[in-house]
Image 1 (cartoon, rainbow, N blue to C red):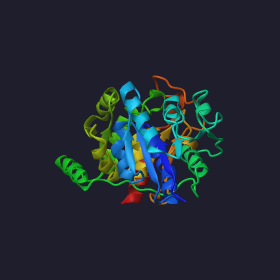
Image 2 (image 1 turned 30 degrees about the vertical axis):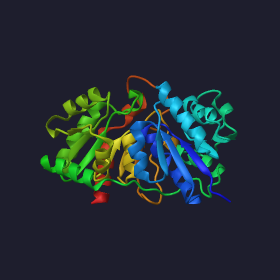
Image 3 (image 1 turned 90 degrees about the horizontal axis):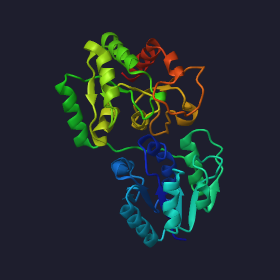
Image 4 (image 1 turned 120 degrees about the horizontal axis):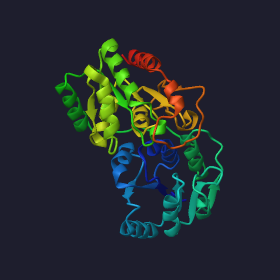
Amino acid sequence: MSEPRFLVVRLGSLGDIVHTFPAVAALREAFSFAQIVWLTHPRWSALIESSELATEIWETETRSYNSLREVIGRVRKADFTTAIDYQGLWKSATLPFLARVPRRIGFSSQTIREFGVPILYTDRVASTATHIADQNGELSRHAGARNGVAPFSLAVSSIQEAFVLQLLRGYSISRYVVLSPAGGWRSKCWPPERYGALCQKICSDLGMRCVLNYGPGEEECAAAVKAASGEADPIAYNGSLGHLMPLLRNAGCIVGGDTGPLHLAVALGTPAVALFGPTDPARNGPYRTAATPGNDIVLRSPNAITTYKRGDRPDPSLLEIAVETVFDAVRRQVEART
């Protein structure tokens, strides 16, 4: 019997792709020689390549008609046996449907966020798992994987790692903590002034410098944290994903909310202090496999209500997480790693 040919659809974003890796690793574990083509946005190709799980990575830009038409035609010609849509959106489900992949696996309406999407699947999986990584694993198991999730590792370029370490040496930094204060919606982000106060305590009490990671559109948040940090003067970093990976892997720990960089750091084996508010850490929190064991610290107010509501100011529950509480968690993580 010939090996199946899988089309994996997970277009973005950073944290969501990281939480898809365990499920695709289970697919690769079960079908060692199968063709697994991962369809994604060009921005994430290098990240997916670092997992070494996909036979090929195909890029598409969903806002470009020409790009979509090209990739749909390419999928039609590839003779895939199964498509697995780990994203569960109209834009992701439509691609294998229009490309006429005979078997299309996705979540049922009980799990999916956008109404009506499951109509495009031939196989609809009613998820019973809590964490999104395990939910993704249920799709892999439905496709024939023995286990829903499996360990994976991410390859970090030695050249890029050398570059980052040299950059840090230029600031006389050898031990550091990464702060990831932004993350899309402000309602799930701890206030910038508290990150600044935390940075000051890390510097004065632990003798460590902070590296402030931020991405496109997050300049205002980064500037606010830097201003609140005073003489602790964190190093602001907004470089490429290839350079971010060694920066995260070599950190004493990372502090952040429900953000892509935090989930990437966990996948690289870095201890995390995760600050949660309106999103549920049971579903979206740090997730580890046997390849990256660790004990992450998740801080969330007992008064927090899971709403996933987007807003332009921190959720009130996040204001109940004190700087001293976060600092104590950072200290424990740093001491455990040294």
